[in-house]
Length: 251
Image 1 (tube, rainbow, N blue to C red):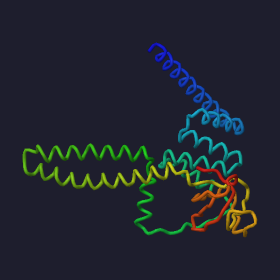
Image 2 (image 1 turned 180 degrees about the vertical axis):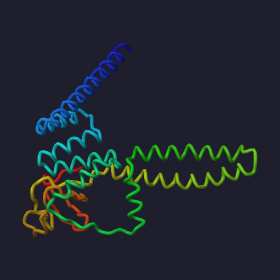
Image 3 (image 1 turned 90 degrees about the vertical axis):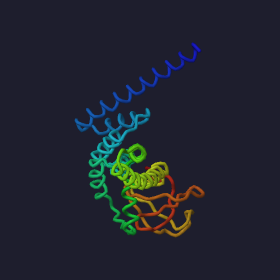
Image 4 (image 1 turned 30 degrees about the vertical axis):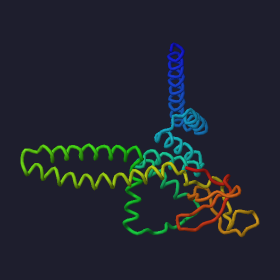
């Protein structure tokens, strides 16, 4: 038992030291960024991330450093990673839009039915953690409405509990689906950013196949399949093709 507690103390100390090192690296990176030393800032931000201290703010700051350093593809990648952790981060959204405006490709977005687009936007508006909090809050309120329905002293109170319970149950079911959709997107890592200045998208997973189109650094794609050392990708306009894994980096 003594060895067990010593092990716990050692692990806690090591974790605390690692967290302190990561925080120190991030703070130093902020200072170098303010003095326009973007190469050093990038190295320190990456060091903090490598120590397992990922956060939306850290990815956002790294994206800013890459953008200032003229590395637009990596800037877009890190803004996207910040938004995976905090979907409603307005600064990251604004800077992502600015970085995307400087990309060479202009790919149309395949239109969706309005209710599908509404559901997608709503599910992406919060992270899985955010939707879990919403779900728990709704569950708590539903339990309270059930209590009101059961022990309300007047008919009016019991009716209020019944109506509130029906509404809250409906919202709870919707929140469950939205939480699931948000979690599935967060865990899939199917979206990726083109990292090379230009890549040739092929019609099939082989070098001898027909060239289908050219994509440039910063373009966003969705990976749907991996075969024989190739990725099958889909663009926002529905166009499909194949590229080599080294050409893109998953968000």
